Length: 366
Image (cartoon, rainbow, N blue to C red; front, side):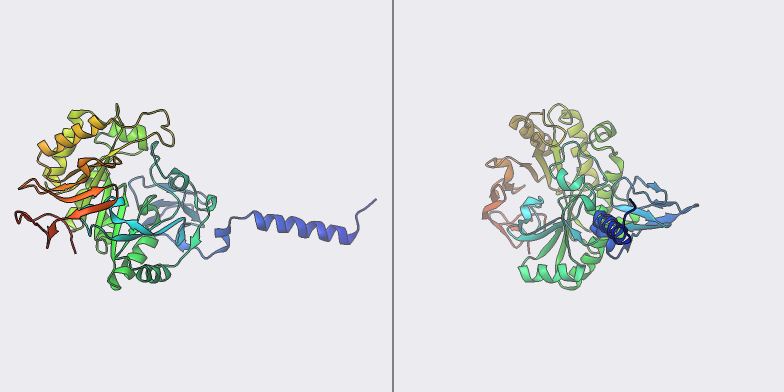
């Protein structure tokens, strides 16, 4: 028995509905062309945003999963699609200890990353594509209005990797600067020189994850290399951006005293002895669930090495209650900012100087 004409129409309508519903939500929205890419032959493009310089054929995406070649044009699929919004973030959480301490920062992120860190603490969003997570759409103008309304002094581009939502960060940062807001970034530093220098014009502070000091470590745990990160740090210093560095210590992997010494001497000689360095305690996470938390004595040894190398402001993170959370005057050695976790208990930095001896303390204090 042949199906009726009406039944055939209903079946076609049902199949079309299923196909439409199956499409990711972002495919129905306006696409935003990416910055920093070259057009090659046969509708192929090459991304120039980060050191990977992905060559992307038609219909494919780069390593980060958020930049797609459609018809020979590279599009960013994460523009304005925020997977995390927090207007109550302590700036110490970034961590930034020498930049407007005690203030809140308006933190945002989109999905994706250009590294594959086995120890990532935000892997649920950093290792996902935009269509795989829930998001809130927010244009740069709307975001800046929200930040001003929140009372925050800064916007933090953080949680995942800001480089992969570069276009959104850049557009927002320009608007924010015009409105008297400051821009801060927590990044892996894996970005090419030209886009970084352009961004730095609107960037006030950055905490860069220097995950290790050898290519072997970077290759094994992040699928990247260390030299581009070191170059980014030097560029940020040249551009006048306030820099702090985080080094997550994995016991038995990047805690070798010799390499820590080399890293600290490099920081001192290339960025300056006043550059704050945060040694962070690692916990079992993501693909490294079998590791033990970093021993306290390992963190304390690293801090001592750094101070012996001449670095003046060295901290221990992810270890609430440690004396390594405090800021000490490099001259009189007194605790001038006392912290517990992300909270400031006492601040004796007055107009950028130690209250007790008058020594100038490096940082941005107001």
